[in-house]
Length: 120
Image 1: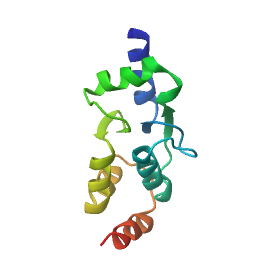
Image 2: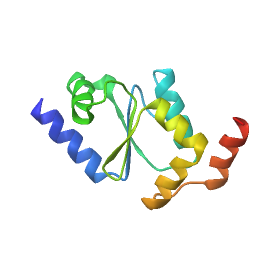
Image 3: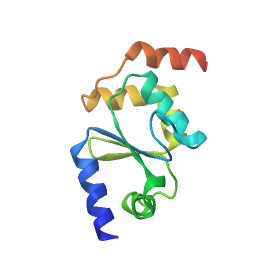
Image 4: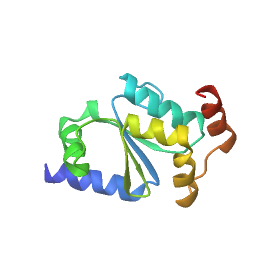
């Protein structure tokens, strides 16, 4: 498991935005992963996706790494942000925009506004 922890740490540290998910950003394998990937994709966020279904050590390791029991998990500039419910709430409140701006991550602000308008 130490190898998985090292791999996770390196991935999180070496990529501005990382989504640990079931499936991939182009083919999510669960609804929660699909929702978070859909938000990031729609907002034009460049991110690395890690399919936890490909490696059981990574699947369990990411839960241990973050001390968070569920997947997906979003990391921005090395910081664990949250899972599906948290990302959904942050998107609708504008907090995700603020976080991305603070961390100097490029995204489409108009697309973020469209998400909020569609869910108002």
